[in-house]
Length: 358
Image (cartoon, rainbow, N blue to C red):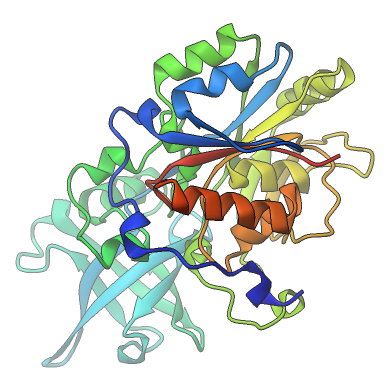
């Protein structure tokens, strides 16, 4: 399909630069399978839950994935910025380095505090192990495992989406604001933003409404920020992200479906993991590994019946996904309604509740 079929115009002032406060006060646009759109708030979400539904959240945790450092070559010093994209093993990460042309394979980069290298608590060094044509760089850090995680927490910065960082720098509040209440498994470099709307009180009210709550993991990669550069969806290649659905959760969700309940995905990341783990008949199997599933109109959904998600960027793979879920014309009409009604868009913005077309 032509990528320009998934375009729309958003006034810049509609881009949310901070989350709603309190979180449940964010607006919620209900897009039923048929019928008119309904303007609600996130606090109304339990009203849309049916007894017996299974609500699936992503428990990935965002790491401070943006690093600043320097490369020293004799007396020549180059400032280097690295955005971690995907963990390769205990000590190695695939990163996007800028300016990559300043780096050679085998060179060392000193991240964190570089004025006093005796202060190891503020230091994080890495070796350039490999380079790609588009700035992709494999960094082998001196630390590994939990020690590397702790070092990243000390010297890394929260990687806010480009459309926010272009308007304001990341601040101390973003460390908490850009993390969901479900965050438990470190590894994401972008938040599963639908989960940002949740509070403990909202979670309890959803369970009281008769739903069960389940966790999956999908480590959201930096590619989630990348635009689709191809003119046709057939020419676009998705970045791979690592995810896991354990056997107990798969059994519980299969039991929900067998008893007539719906599976409600909180966010496109949860949906993509579930659809990656689904069999042709809709049954879910345990899953652990990379997924590069690319969902566009014409895709037959097998596992997910309803989707709670934010508003997505024009021409993005996530807008294509929701158009596949609810229909392209209907979804673009919903976005037009949201723009006209003053909804806030993107990562810190408002949400939609979509019921899948049968």
